[in-house]
Image (cartoon, rainbow, N blue to C red; front, side):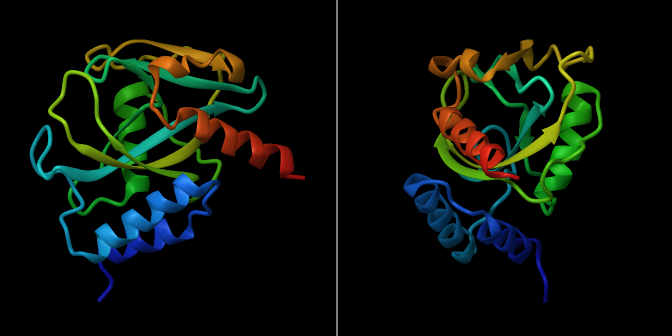
Length: 187
């Protein structure tokens, strides 16, 4: 029988680790899925204490800019994203959340997630661990976006060297390094 857990396990297995830390995060995630643990957040903010998230990094390939959001609860500049709902495919999470948060449709650079991280949360939320699948979607930095003002103070397009790493996801620099490496070697 094919389950959403086995689908997610296959997705995780397909991610090519960029560095030792991503390799360790992938191994942790594979073991977590294999354990039979609940993968999806059932109740806000942290039940279960470890659950799936889909980030979507909006990337304008022409201007080489990344869209980031000033997230109210985490008090960080992050890629947009959201919790994967019970029995939802993580890619469907991106399609749902991008409409809710930015008012646009998702056009994916890659079919599968490009990056995976395991992170303890910070900010104004109960401490929990997010297992985050990072998707890359196409964006246009000249397009005006109607973002969710209940979730974000503001949004901003950043050049690679302007990203506020000191106030971002602890893995943001590693994600950017992986994306830049991929783009430099894709010919």
